[in-house]
Image (cartoon, rainbow, N blue to C red):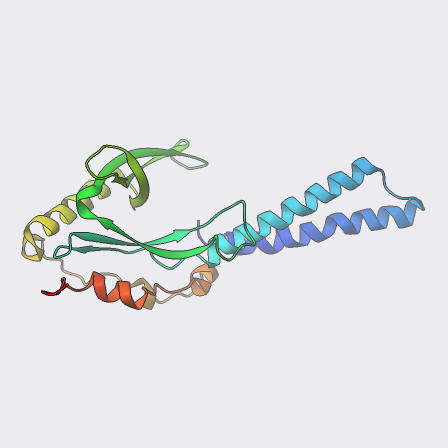
Length: 216
């Protein structure tokens, strides 16, 4: 679905302008001010269309090209490149953007869940998320997306466990190199062209790819 929002956004922006224009035209042609109820309807329509346009645009163009997860066996840490967004604050800069998070591997637990929405599978789809537990308890303090379906999630989680328990030698060999979304050739999808590339903060990038020092 990504790529639809960039085309819906201009339509909503035009719609937000249309409401006050209609009120002005009404006042000019009728030679009287529109009623309070009509003004309120126009104001609500303008705000809603403006909000929807900004939301569609930012969801399509500000979400990164990928949200990778790094597993560091030596540190027993998991580094997650997460995109945060807040639909109630479409104009806020601080409420939107990629913010890497660091979690302890021992506190992660895989969960299968169903998401309901306007989908072709009858209104629901199954996904796998990783729950972050409070140390020593079963209390969930955070969750993040892991896989789009149960079968894929089971495979990815089994590979993550193999890597963290036994190391890279336990993983199966793959005939193709991993996909690099940053260098993907994008032709027709405007949203993916405008989307920011994955850029880890320098400190987290170094930490997530290294082992702890003997002195640290």
